[in-house]
Length: 331
Image (spheres, rainbow, N blue to C red):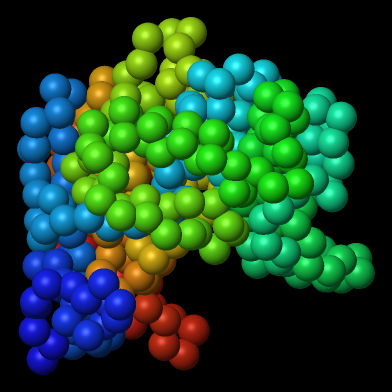
């Protein structure tokens, strides 16, 4: 067993700090529990008080792409003009469908830029169906197809607006300071560490409590504010925030007015219009375990008011020989 000692500054695996995660989701097959996903989660009420907590939600985690809606608030505050579709895509980890790439291109075009201004990594579309269709049409890995292109198009457009060097926006201290200050202000926490996300933008260590608080600020914001604009755009165009068939898109369709965003390595954040909010971290980074525990917390809070469509996201079957033989569900 790896001991939980202070983390080395040179080798984070030498003496790693291990969060005290708890079992959240189990996969059964037949009469046996086949797998267990551990993690941490927190549910806050409209006043920001903890309604439910499991594991160690006060520990610091990288929210990964769940930071995108907070970044989008910062860009609006800095003066960037985006329509609702462009704003939803700036907050997205999109599937790479033609509409996603078209909206990202429109953000660039409005700033008199094109795809060559993007500084994110190249990739194929993230969505399975979208990737198959793209490859069948002869597509190759590009920055526009990569799931973060909406955010990067907005960052490049902001740099052009401000007269900053668009060729080096990922290293512009003015832009990076704006992103960090926005995250700290919305989450109510000082960032305890940072690194670089897969697409090249910064990613900051904050607690699940801070992440939930940040999403609550969006969902319950006063109309006309940058926070409210981001929330409204995401709620209006959930198919741009993820894509058809993606659980985050379906969650927002099931809960009108809700703001939801996932992040790689098992992160999920959701806020309801009244300011109730939750955040989840799955310890092993499993994508499949995010939604069962998210739905359990939301359904428990909403009670009889929980829409039927929410239950459809609560579990998924384990298949054997083409028939269900078990289930993946929250404990």
